[in-house]
Amino acid sequence: MTRETMAEFEQSVLSPWQDWCLGLEALGLNQERRAVRVLLQAPRLQQESETTWQVSFGLPAGAFATSLLRELCQLDNEKAVLGGSTDVHEPYQSAN
Image (cartoon, rainbow, N blue to C red; front, side, top):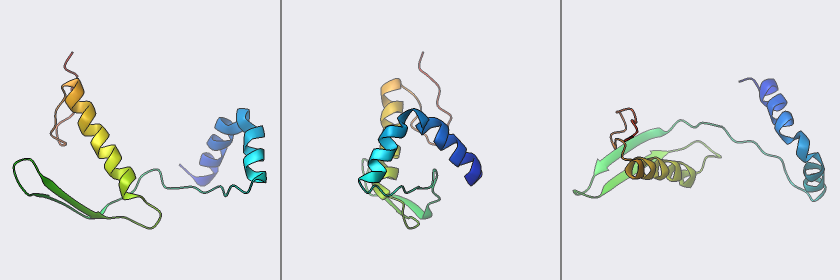
């Protein structure tokens, strides 16, 4: 998406909340944007033991490792709960 397209989308989503947006701006909110997706730098996965893995990677400025790890954990938990594959290379298939 281009910046213009994203700006139009953002405005369409926020238009019902315009009063809130203006109020937050008046209180000094800095409107900042972050990348929707982030490319890992030098990702590494090493098995320490049968049940322990070490994950390491670099991120560009402005990206948060905790956000990435949260998404990985949610993916793993959803698959475990729903009975799907735990192999990241195998497509998820519902147990139903």
